[in-house]
Image 1 (cartoon, rainbow, N blue to C red):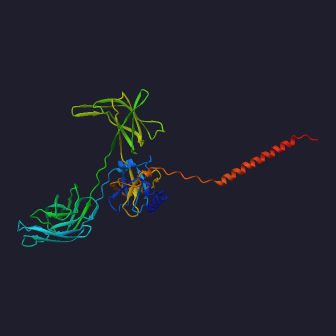
Image 2 (spheres, rainbow, N blue to C red; image 1 turned 180 degrees about the vertical axis):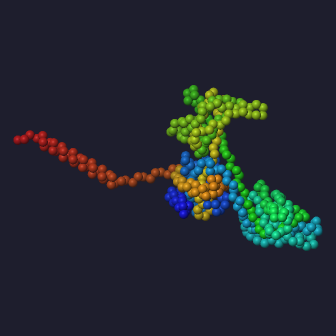
Length: 461
C-alpha cells in the first residue's frame, strides 16, 4: 500500500510539471537492462552535459514512446556505482543438426533453412553429403536474429538422467547461414560421484561482434546430450570510470601589467577536481583558479594559490596532484592566474564524476532521455522515498537497473535554447478602478477640508 502511494505521488508530480519532447534540443534512446525493471538509472554522458542549458540540469527529462514525461529525479555520482547487470535469461529458438559422418572423412552437411522476412528461422532441413546415412543429431543451430540485447553467455540445459560426460564445444557464428566464423569454445559437463554432482552448462561468448545465428558443435569424436532448452544471458554494460577528465585550452588576456588566462567550458559538468598543466616539458608555477557562470557575476576563487609542477627524468614523470574543490562547480567561465606567467597559455583540466538520472518506467517503450531547453523544466519526483523503501527491503546495495544511452539525435536543436517571450500581463481593471476611486475620494476629502477652513476664516458681519 505504501509503495503504491509513493508511485502515485511520483506520477502526479511528474504529470503536473511535464514538458514536451519538442521543447528539447537533443535526445538519446535508452537500452534497458531488462524490460520489467520498473525503476532505471541513466549515467549522464559528456554529450548530455554539453547539451544541457540550465545550470541545475533541470532541462533533462525522460519520455516514453507516447511522448509522456516520466517521473524522474537527479542523484549524485554515488548513484552511478556499477550494479551487477541482471543475469537475464532469454529463451533462444534452437534446431538440431546432424554432425559429420564419422565413417566418411569427406562427408559434409548441407543446411537448408526456411526463414521469414525478419530473418527468423522457421524450419531446418539438414542432410549429409557424400555420407552413408544421417546419424542422430547432436549439434545445434541457435536463432539469435530477434534478440537485440548484447549477450555474454549461453546456458545449455539437458535432461537430468543423461549419462555422465565432459565435452568441449565450439561456437561458430553466421549472418547468412552459409559463411561461418569460429568465435569461442567452452566445456560442458555433467559428472557424478555418489550423491555429489558437478554440472557445467554455461558457455561464454566473445563480445567482439554479434551474429544472427550460432552453431554449437561438439569436438569429434564426442557428442552432446539431447538438449531440452537453450537460454542466452544478457551481457553487462561496460564499467563506468570513477572519474572523468576534460582538458580546455585557454587564451591569454591582460589587465594592465597583469597577465591571466581565460577558459570557456561548454558543458554543465559538475567539476570536483581541477589541475593546471603548462605546455612546457618541465615547469613550476603558483596557480590560482577562479570561475563564474557569466560576466555579470564576480569571480570566485576555486583553488589556490598552490604550487604546480611537472618534472620529467628519464622514463618517469613527477607532477603535482590535482586540487579537490570544496563542492561541485558547473560554471562556464574560468580564469587562471600564474606566478610567474608561463610562455604559453596552460591547459585547464577539470575532473568530475557523472551524475545519475533515476526514472520510473511507465507506458510503452522505447524510452528516451531529452536534454537542453530554455523553457521546459523537470520537477524532481519524490523517487528517493521509493528508493529508500526498496533498499530497506532488498539491501543497502540495491540500485535501479541500468539504462544505457545509445546514439543521440537532434530534436528541436538550437531553437529549443531560445527563451520564449514572456506573455503580456493582462490589464487589471479592477485594481485601476479601485485606485481611481481612492484618489477621487482623497481629493474630495481634501476639498471639503479646505472649504471648512475657508469658512472659519471669513469675518463675521
